[in-house]
Image (cartoon, rainbow, N blue to C red):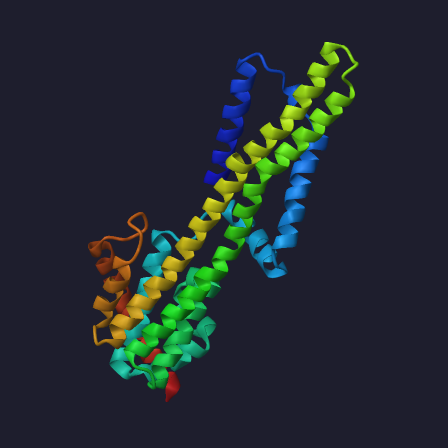
Amino acid sequence: MTVIIGLGIVIAAVFISYLAGDGHLWALYQPTEILLILGAAVGALVIATSRRSLRLLRLGLAGIFKRGIYDKALYMDLMSCMYLILSSAKREGLRAVESHIENPAESAIFSQYANIIKNKRVMEFLIDYMRLMISGNMSSLELETLMDEELETVRETDALPVHALRTMADGLPAFGIVAAVMGVIKALAAVDQPPSVLAELISKALVGTFAGVLFAYGVGFPFADALERRNSEAIKALECVKVTLLAYVNGYPPQIAVEFGRKVLFNTVRPSFVELEEHVRSTRHSGAGAGAGAQSSGK
């Protein structure tokens, strides 16, 4: 929603100020120059970018127009979910949570948190490392190293569409100049025409430069920054899981482990210590019930 609002502000500021200076909007309507700029920019993007990166870019651009999912409510649920899982593991051993890990959709714990189950990236990260913890063959240092390597890979993958979009935005002003030069060439070819005709041709040529710069700094770069911000929010959720699990592996009780996870969150979505404590306390009873259910099913 903020992306749409911001884009509206950019368009309104540019064109209202133009109209306030007695400009004529019809003079800016040059579809052939717009086609040249955008078509050449998209073509260059396709040449320079892999098919996978183009797919990630398409999905990312669609996502920035939607409401962000990484809010305080999601993190409260995520940390509560991890608290229940780790509490069950502490009471009954890591093997006791294996049924929850192997079939999250039917888990008495995970089924309480639909928004966590729907988040494929977070679920895969959490479940994969819980499996490694259950195996019992990795030290906390080895586990942390592997987590860091995976997070670095995720960051590099997420950076691909951002880099592609910024590269395209870098080229938009240049393609605007190309359109302007072509317009000037057309104007010079009509040098024998009256001054009014030449003035119109030159003004049309300058629209190319205007459009290229506007598309780059009013759309391209802001969209790339918005996509990067969304990626950063997604990475932060994985870091929260990482820190919480490592704290538990290093011997901290579940309630302290989720506090480790809370501390790595951005201030804008981080629940207070009291909020998290109350939320965790409210889940203890259901967590105990879930653990008992898992134990009885194991028997």
